[in-house]
Length: 200
Length: 200
Image (cartoon, rainbow over the protein chains, first blue to last red):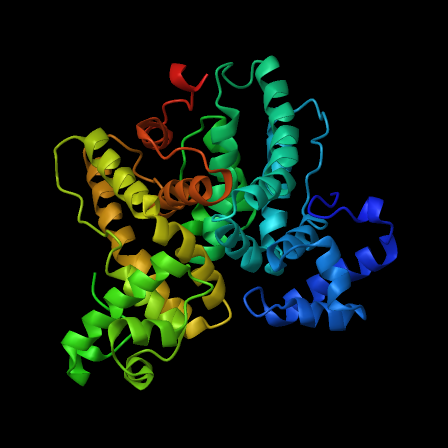
């Protein structure tokens, strides 16, 4: 997904820009979000600190862009099959949070942005809006097929999906497996939430 | 809830111990989790850094204890009414994350603990196990009343509840209101997830 926190496209330094984002992800993997510094990213990218500061006013913005590039926001294909499309959406969400750097960084990043409304709204644009709109399209398709109620709250569905996945990854450490994906799909199609044999 | 990250009870310094935790919450409110240092907490509590390090090996442990003291883990009273008891459990969870310090610190803290399995398991003990067990008791009561299916996955229910609430607080910024609470209760009692008038 496109970079939303910098104006590198117009500033005209696409090669350094992409090298810096690669370096940021690399430092993130090795040192974690709290320990990441602009200095370390500059050293890893082989550029000066001022080059980074020219594009990203602060660490949060740089990390957000670096993660946004690897965050999946696929359009959900029209498969003519509501279950398959919802499962696609849930699997994409699991895929995003199964990424170790993402799981460790995204919540810390969001918490760090909460006091900065301007950056927080760019963050939401990068990580929420496009993915949410793409999934909402699939949900509305399912409503038109008559497979979901026409007053379905498509925002709540996505809060439940992404929230449960993030919470498991971050807090409980429970697996993000096919069993969870099926439960999350069934929650929306209104099949009861039941324990399967392998979880008993 | 009790302190799980220190051995202050036996080390015999209950007054300083509680003063340090108060100071930690105060510094957290003023400066946020990333900026909090042991030095600042020591200064605010009027103790030496070594006093803090005697009880808490690192910042994460200190903050976890400070937050654990204000994290609600109520036993859910037997109200003879499944809806009322589930609503009690959801409201308690909302209450925990509506707290600004908690919302901003808990995810960053969890992310910081992920690389330290020993501290992570203490963290889960403080923030998850007792609350989860207390809510599970209420869910099992509802199952015995015949109000919920007897193979209900009580862990998944709680992941869905806490996950949705945390995600809204941290990522989307959507309100944690009575409308959300009712939706989350209905998700478990298998009423369809529908948009109410005031959200339309």
